[in-house]
Length: 211
Length: 221
Image (cartoon, rainbow over all chains, first blue to last red; front, side, top):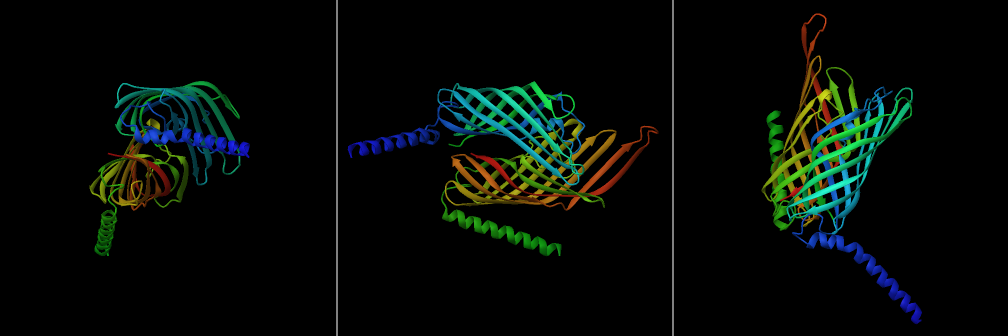
């Protein structure tokens, strides 16, 4: 009986601890104002490449049986990110951009850009901070023909990094400004030469601490 | 006919403003109250269907699914299915005035500029959620210069019905429907014959419309 009560107590305590471990992110995001970027537990949502300049270097096979998805479109995909931020400054997460245009009588294409990242956040005060991130960048194309059902695919791996200045406009909201780069490492294609893709730019994004 | 349509539109807007005011009178807090300026990033991701008709030709249909390109576009003629940055100001707790804006220079894919003024009506349901209905016009222009030039200009009556969810103060997500209906558009082509050096010009009507379910974000301050 006592053993059962102990087990229940341990289970309850464990569950409570688990909930408390999850809860601080929201509690601290809500109730710890004025600490500066990267100084508290939070879940950050980002929208990147909103404005700016991007230059592409690369060789993506142009002869597509179907939709000509512009090779530089991949670098312009709307990038949505989700990051777990900790008060130590360490953070991790990923950015994803997905595009799937379907054009009548022309077939279709799909582009996926996935960028897992680890980062380090520092802030001088509650208004200005810096966010350095790095990680692999995966870019995949797939195009399918409308008439002959032919298809082609390409995949590229790059090493990417971003160095953003973070300006905290109001509580929980920041503007990201800074350079970013993806440098080509590997590429493969279902047919033809291996593709390569590198991109460099300076852009502006938006960050919201949502939890 | 035009006058009665205008009258009907004015009555609809007045009714929306009246409803929004009544909603806000009951709701002391929420979207549109307190923070009066709103910076939006519209159309971040979603499903957008476009129909573009040039002259007497067949319509081209394009469905775009995913995170919408930010400063680029697949669709050249018509209105690009892109993320837009917007700024709106609540002149009244329930009524906003503002505009979406887009500029994109993509070299060999042309230059796009878009202006989307909107009148909005906010219906808050509490501190963290609201309906935001917006109506207005969208004007877009795309130009490509390559052995001559192609310039497309479109004007589209537009409406957005957005649900605003705010997980934390000052930041919110928007989810909803957008519609932009092509009523006027022109495509001007200027071409130069490289052999003879003679230039020719042509002009065609363009009707470009787009509908979609989209996701966005906003900052209020």
